[in-house]
Amino acid sequence: MKNVLFGIMLLFVAISTQAQESKNKNAKYTIEVNGNCDLCKKRIEKAAFSVAGVKSAVWNVESHQLALILNEEKCSVLDVKKAIAKVGHDTDEVKATDEAYDKLHMCCQYERK
Image (tube, rainbow, N blue to C red):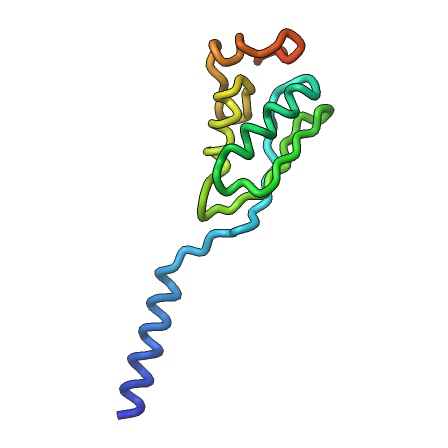
């Protein structure tokens, strides 16, 4: 009887372990975001932080790289890219609309590809 009970418990643990898709609560990513200046930096970082689950967002003006730490259980990198594009900045995967880009300050209007 103990062996049967032990076998059932072992089976339950094996199934539940496989069923769980583990997502990283502190996933680190670096993405390219177009921009020119410190005004862009503030806007890009603010847009990234507007996405629930973003823990850290630091954009480098010279390299145009945004370093992210996010909780993958709450958001994805694509969610962050969409939020950034919404405020007028192109990313490698999501482009800002012309309307959003045109609303940027003159010094923030980077050369679009």
